[in-house]
Length: 266
Ligand SMILES: Nc1ncnc2c1ncn2[C@@H]1O[C@H](COP(=O)(O)OP(=O)(O)OP(=O)(O)O)[C@@H](O)[C@H]1O
Image (cartoon, rainbow, N blue to C red):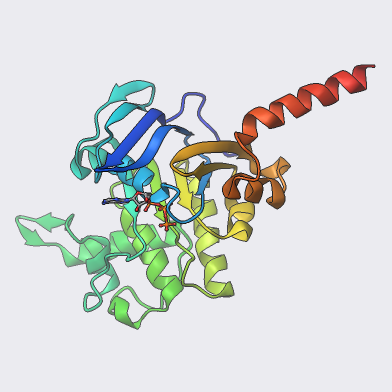
């Protein structure tokens, strides 16, 4: 059974971020629980990348607060985010093409015995990790350049899991993939949830969002424009929040529900 935590593992409250004259984020709230997938959606320039970069320590926030397991924290640089337990997989994947899967998985966190690289241990751990995630790769000893786009994506996600983060941020993980490879990546996202990670999934693809996300948070022009439970929200409602056809969608939704309940009671 998937256990969703009561206190969010990560909460952003009233977060703002400016780049010179550009106000990229204004007063944004976001909550992520362990064992849930939250899709972050919005048009180009809505602030999705900026928001995840505030969480991953690339762009420290100007205003607002960040809470980790209910306590205020400061994320001033990537190291702070990693220490808390945030791992981010960016679109460029940052894999080293000429290195094999094992070397890529342990890049920067190599296992050593008596200060010598322990290749056997790393290979064993790599196989275990890929096995537990049901990731099938022809061999962990082939260079990642020889893998398909979907396999490269799952290797990049597996690498993010080496440090056992509580929150995993995936930036458009299916953007460049075909149907079958997309399914493979979405399967992996499901498994991250089952393992109790909190997942933030940036996506432009409504089918992906519907397939794996529990909730969807919409950003518009750097502000929240609604958070929806995916299971009882239509694509049209989400798209309307993205495009701005609905303003402050959550509030309106609540008002609508309240009115409907009153009508029913008559
Ligand atoms: N480093 C930066 N310096 C200046 N402006 C920036 C910087 N990063 C982002 N912005 C601006 O902040 C706003 C939000 O951009 P952001 O990249 O976060 O949007 P996005 O929702 O991720 O868009 P996309 O889907 O196109 O990636 C945009 O107006 C963008 O031009």
